[in-house]
Image 1 (cartoon, rainbow, N blue to C red):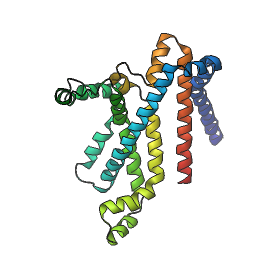
Image 2: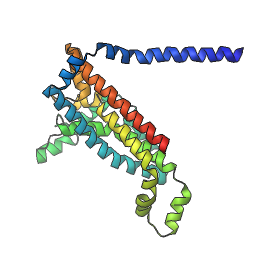
Image 3: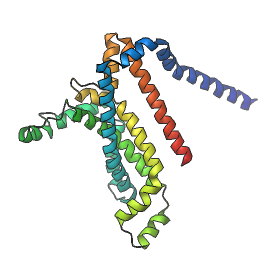
Image 4: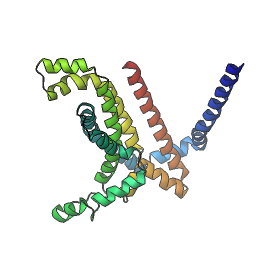
Length: 257
């Protein structure tokens, strides 16, 4: 009787949670109209925003894949007294409010910032409020995701294989290229796909550094606040479909692995 009561309680909670989480998606589908939504997405300005988001997210993901993989390798095989503190430091962007992350990037890379000022005064290079700033903000936010994915992947490689590689005369770099990367490929790929989805959906940090530039999340905010439901609905549905596709890819990769 008690087991039955607990099972019924769990079922009720699952149904309530399902109702809550599905309601925003149902509301979006109800608000979306095919004529207005697709005509809005085919608008030249909106298409440029979509292209900008895709390109910057791909660039940020590429950089994060390289840097995050190296960081994950370092924290897996080079553990020392300060590595735990250092890994926590690199993970900070995961929990920082995105607006705070964007503000700190402004302080560091703005025209009068810690790094931005010397760049501008010496080379006349301005980073903030350019496409480079969007890539920088997305890279800052998604690199910890890639780092954690890489660290998890490398931890799953048996130590015996690494030791065997070293015993056969392979150095650290050769072992990394010939043993660790091939065996970790599925998890690294899943991490990169997740990082891409996170980059293209980033709002707070990119909003702070974008200036007049717009990404898909920024455009959704601007149009929603301006009462242009057609564009906001179309872009929101586009992100939902993209996110769903990304999660499906990650699940498929995980099942095959």
